[in-house]
Amino acid sequence: MNSPTKHSHSLLVPAIISILIATGALWFFFHQGSSQPPALDEESGANRLAASSSAPSPLAADTTLTPEISDNQQEQEVSEPLAVLPSRENLPQAAQGIATFYTYLDQQGYIKARHLSTPSHIYFTRLIQKIIDTPPIVTRETDDLATILKNSIHLFRILGKDDILLSKEILNHEQDKIEEVIADYFLLTEQADGLGPELSLKLPENARYEYACFFLNTMGGKLYLARRDSRTRMVISYYAIMIIHQANLQGKNSYGIQIQPALDLLTAEIETGGNQLHYKEAYLDTLYGLKEKYQ
Image 1 (cartoon, one colour):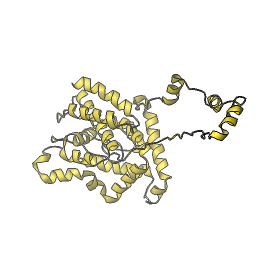
Image 2 (cartoon, rainbow, N blue to C red; image 1 turned 90 degrees about the vertical axis):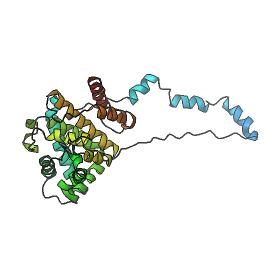
Image 3 (cartoon, rainbow, N blue to C red; image 1 turned 120 degrees about the vertical axis):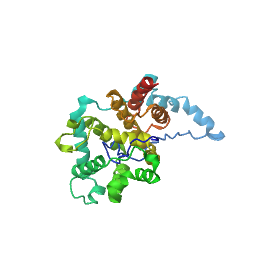
Image 4 (spheres, rainbow, N blue to C red; image 1 turned 180 degrees about the horizontal axis):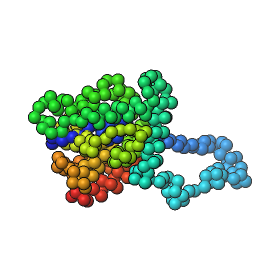
């Protein structure tokens, strides 16, 4: 984010790689209380002791009711399949996932209260297109303080107060869904023909690259991410790195962005603070591979 390059923060999804999403994490605490047997007084102790010789002991009963669980059984109960990021074979499912999400949004009370002029899939596709059509400044950014300030409020200038607040409201309500929606958008925007008529986005070839550079390599982009919650910051940084990596593979990293510093920082952040991420292990697997490649 330091050099004259691009990298924008999308509050909703695809080029939302740039837009993304923002907000916090859900934690579940399970408390198991323990009960203690009543104490015996000295007077009744003998009588109760005599009765205990013929009655089954509470300990025996407890053991019968709660059989010991082996380590293997515990591992099977606790372990869950790791979430896998969608791949090219999942294009139809990705498109369907986005469509399902927008249908779901239309049914939510906080969205109905906004009285949007069109269904969600049309409304937000238009917002995303506005972001795509208005790239941030990524070259010679530090020549002028006004340019840094413009970049730091880039999305606000494009979307305006009402749509920014709407995007934040969605992020606050749908924390458990947005990360998967972004993954689907990222997959679909890898190739323009993956968008299909339902999304109808016009995506210039360098649009994703420009926003990735903005977030990783400009002061305005870095300031923007610094104001976001850790979950949003990690997800946006991950996809920005992936876009620069793809540009390297295609010989199209025209700004010469070095991603190793960002790789190291993001890997460490996800390792220590990424437990709320749905795709945590998938992100780390990819980042470990990239770290070996770019070391």
